[in-house]
Amino acid sequence: MKTGTLCAFFLVLLAWTAQAADVPPQAQPVQKLLEAVKASDVAKLKEVFSGPLKKRLAEIGWKIVLKNYQKGFKDLVGDFEIKDFSFKFEGTKEAGKVQVHHKKKKLPDVSVILESGSWKMNER
Image (cartoon, rainbow, N blue to C red; front, side, top):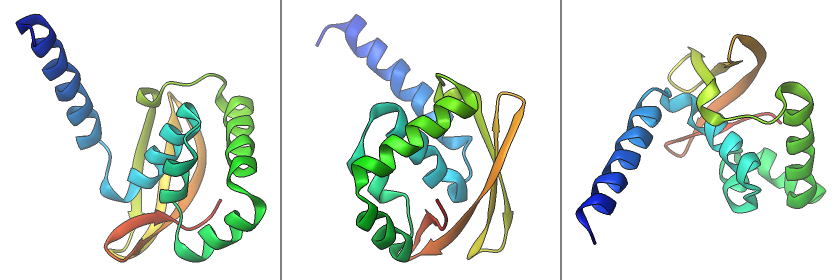
């Protein structure tokens, strides 16, 4: 690997690490949701929800769920960049709400829970 390519790789890795560090652990499922919607990634979308909610969404069909989220975000904020979102958590060490802002626009809060050691969205 050439030195320039290696330097570029590390710069991208550093930027990604810095961005991830700015996101509270409780808000990571919300950020993953945004990533899944942006990339049309059904597998990543399945990772963000709590067990009971995941079962209900599977009944609807993951491709339909993804399309609904894509339409919802397009209507709400248009074409978005993940870096334009910010998050704040309020709650306990097991559950709470993530406040979501896109640029300066407040979006609806998202309910999250700690499930088997990982934070998950507990509503759609």
